[in-house]
Picture (tube, helix red, strand yellow):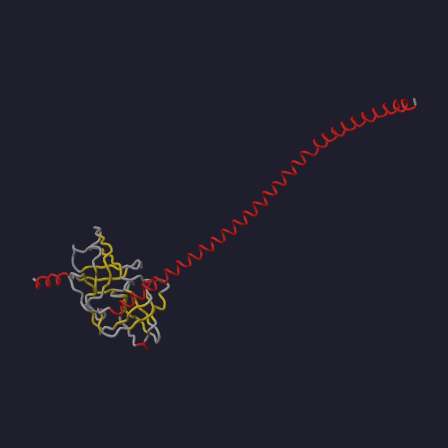
Length: 287
C-alpha cells in the first residue's frame, strides 16, 4: 500500500516536471527566435563590414603590388631607354669618327690641314656662327676657311689666342661667289629667315636648274678656292612676283651637329670637280 501511495504521489509531480520542462523549452525557443530577430541584422551588418574590410585589405595589397610592379616596369623601361640612348650615342660617335677619317683621307684638299673642335655655337642663332678651339697660337688667321667633309662651313672672322670665331655660310651676312656644276655663275647667301638654309641667285636666267643639283664655290674670290661644295638645291620657287627664280639651298651640314671642322688657308688648293662637259669630252676622246 505504501508503495502504491508513493507512486501515486510521484506520478503527478513527474508529470508537472515534464510539462514544466516542455513549457520552459518552448519559451527558450521563442526567446531564441526573438534574439535571432534582433541580432541577425546586426550580425549581417558585422559580416558585411568584415567582408568589406577584407575586400579593402585585398584592394590595398593589390594596389601596393600594382604600384610595385609599375615601378619595376618603369625602372626596366628607363634602363632600356638609357641603353637605347647609349647605343645611339655610340652609333653617332662612330659615324662622327668615320666622317673624320674620311675628311682626313679626302684628297680634295692640297696643303696643310688643321683639325679643330667646335667649342660652342652662337646661343642667339645656331646658324650664324660657331667657335673653335684653335687660335693665333695655332697659326689660325682671319679669312681662313672651314670645311666639314667636302662641304664648306664658313670662314674665320675673329681670332683670339686660344680660340676663333667662324661665320657660317648660313649666316645672313655671308655672300659667296658660286656656280653650278654646269658652270652657271651665281651668288649664294645665308637665309634672312635664319633657318639654316641658303639662297642661290644665278647670274643669268637658267631653266635647267633642278632639285638635287650641287652648287660649288666659283673660285672668283680672295678667300674661297674653286670647287668646294656649298650645298644642294632643295627648292626652286618660280612665282611670278619674283624678278628671278628663288633657289633654296640645303648646306652639307647641320650646324647643331657640328663637332669638328677642318681649317684650311687660302694658299691651299682644291681639286676641281669634273663637270658634265668634261665627262663628255673624256668619253669623246676614248671613242
